[in-house]
Image (cartoon, rainbow, N blue to C red; front, side, top):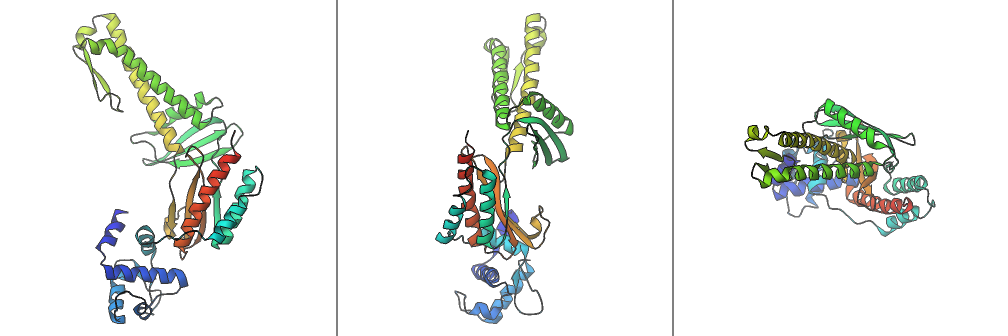
Length: 356
């Protein structure tokens, strides 16, 4: 992302305008845009030869391409990405489109599946693209959890729910985790799942962390007040209790037992914090995303674009996603606001229909 940002900042105003007009012209017509076409629309009066020189520079940067021998240019996937990230002007959702989306949300009674089917069909019709709807994440009781390490940066959580539903989610694990620590976390969570929802599991772990911290504080209070020990990074993830003259303390069994208990509680606290991190990572989701061409790994279609937006419940938690798949020559300025608007409405409606 930083490379793309610097690329844009290095372009002068003339190059930026030529680039923007080529992309906008291509997105509108689907045809390569030639220098003569741009001479009629540029803010600054430029000759076709000057514009061709700018286009050649943009082609050298990998932002434009010549589909054949003609003088016209089209944006590359990198060019589209740069345009979407830095130059695209978003429009507003037309009243006619708003009315269609809102009408699709008005039927279906309390059936969330029927609601999502209708929204999907409407979104597809409005955008003239295939629609994608990911149903709300399960909030059923969890029966079993398993973490599978895919690489140092990627892991898979397999959630088996009490109703028999199985869900897989890919996430980035907390730094420094090993397959063994993941298995330990999964075993612990499965053991205490006991028909709880994911959110309830997270609350339970949070309470255990608070309880452990309180026990440590209670046991350590006398040592700290007597000056025999002091806290380092108190309250942080890296907090430690440093004991002075530990060899003298170990002579008294009561103090030795106290220190062993504190060590045990620290180890337990650290494990609980790791498990809490796992749950948070597994539940988290991305914001609004646009995948262009080969970035779209989910569908492995080099000539397609996926525009997707999450929708949230009343607690601002991501519970699903909605989007469209189409050619890279999408009218991004129109479609991005439509997808975003639809996701907001769907989140509100799903939350209302699944209350209680």
